[in-house]
Amino acid sequence: MTTKQFHRALAAGALTLTLALAGCGVSSTTAGGMPGMPGASSASSEANAADQMFLMMMIPHHEQAIEMSDVVLAKGDIDPRVLDLAQRIKDAQGPEIEQMEAWLDDWGMGHGGMGGMEHGDGMMSEDDMRALEDASGADASRLYLQQMIEHHEGAVEMAEDAVEDGQHPDVIALAQQMADAQTAEIAEMEQLLTEL
Image (cartoon, rainbow, N blue to C red):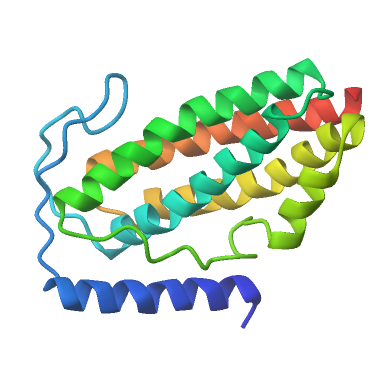
């Protein structure tokens, strides 16, 4: 079993326990969505375990992407193109976290139990985060891009799994939106790395 498979199995076990404790009854009344985001509709269908696992795992994943972006945004010697990208990532993922938490709240699910998913699905370790904090100038710009490419690749894979295995139309739409946006950002970051 690979490390990634182990982390997925661990997350699945945690989700199964959460669902059992919640009585497994997840109604699909969607929380009010934000303009331009899935969730604005009043689609009525049941969310399955894949939908719920995606949301519970993607929230801490997004939170770390914002933390990484905050680290470089606080530095004064970062390439302006990298700063622009970091701000766009932060601006996109903050509202997505709010939407995902709203759905889980609406379904009676907690959303604080997946914070220990280090090293899986592109998550950075504490050492990775420390290296980013300690880096400066062009080194920090390059390291942020390299780390965020890996982070995005994990998110895209998670989102594609949700599109394939999920059931709730709004969750699937958000997952597809994430996969498309982050795939485009990966290409942008790979190009930037060649120019720094």
